[in-house]
Image 1: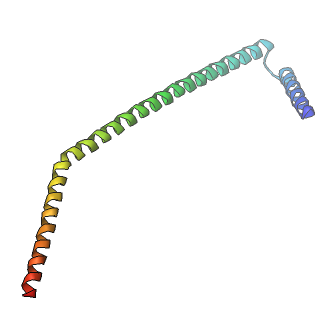
Image 2 (image 1 turned 180 degrees about the horizontal axis):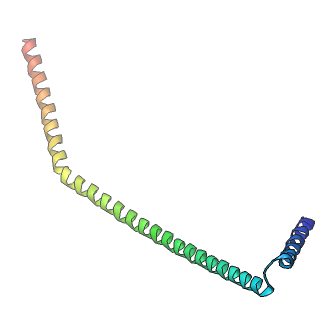
Length: 119
């Protein structure tokens, strides 16, 4: 691995030197081109870093808002459920009373039928 990295680095340096020696432009032109390229690359890297930072902030805001909405939603659902149970309780009680009355009426009718058939 050490030899590979050394070879790669040597190749880069030799390629750069060869490119500088064989270029049809003057040294000043090459320096200006290199400076402009480095400046542009630096600006692009800064832009990417800023956008990544903005993205992190947006993701955090979205996560916070989602948690807030989830909490509010769960509270609202719990309140609606409690309200429904509170409003339905009298109906449930009436249904139970009517079911008990029907059961008693059936028992009375059963007793009456048995007594009339045994006579």
